[in-house]
Length: 145
Length: 276
Image 1 (cartoon, rainbow over the protein chains, first blue to last red):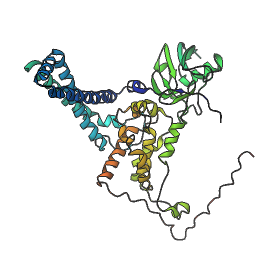
Image 2: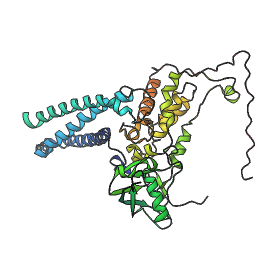
Image 3: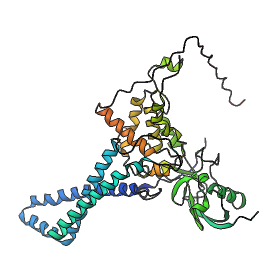
């Protein structure tokens, strides 16, 4: 058979954003993945920052002075946001992956009702809890300290 | 009869000719569209009246065969199932399904999807090979057992879920919603005993746990198959199996022939005579 040239139409990372009907679960999917990668990046930066101690107290104090900049306060909140969202949404995903809240297979009758509709109350409860936890953390970071 | 009102719609079709193009280009067509015309109808008219070189794939025109899946206004769906004037009154973009290679214009290369479908062994696998070769009776299956997987048998392999899946976009080793749904469909079938053989594909690192429940496959599916549900239930069964928590899946037994009944003789398939 004659081989013909084909165009690679994989979306790549843009595919996280494009090619769909934009249900709310897709936004959660993107935030979950970005938050996961962000936490990983934070851990690496945190290890680097902590490792400054081996160069002596002066280096350590200098690093601590840099971290007192207000930008890092915002960064602290972003890390907290990512952690709280990733943890709570992760619990929702674990519950769903264990078969809770997706319902049983049913006859597809138009207009179709999918497992997304079944798990939506769980999603709303988890997101409300996440919002409360994130707001409480924000209050602690920006107002109380 | 009153003349039906026609609306001028501008179609921006993403085209690719493997002979002349390095990458896809957008071509503009203007068409008078009336109520009742699907996107597939419009593309037919464009091909007949404006540009015979436009390539696309179709067959049944009624949402059964799954050939005409395309990216319409950024969403993967069946062109024959989509009313043009329901989507727009001015501009419509049409392109080939993403997450597949483009062969030409609106024709995606679905071979990788069918390849992975083949690898999940989408058929009944049993350990009693003798019974498989020479059946002595029907297998028991209750209506309740049938309902456990019936929804997932409506899949028409159109590739819309694969195009909508954000995990497919970045992970090329991910089997995709269609194949995983079919793996669950056969694993759950009470007549089947091949779950262990399918585990190699679905439980590996780029397997079913790559799904983080964006739910786009279920939103996009034109047949209401709900692949996201099948994938979550497949994960549940794998976890139960790993932790030895699940009930042993007893394969359906054969129903013996009632007394005084005779089985019809097996109809032999005619010899294969391709090319004659």
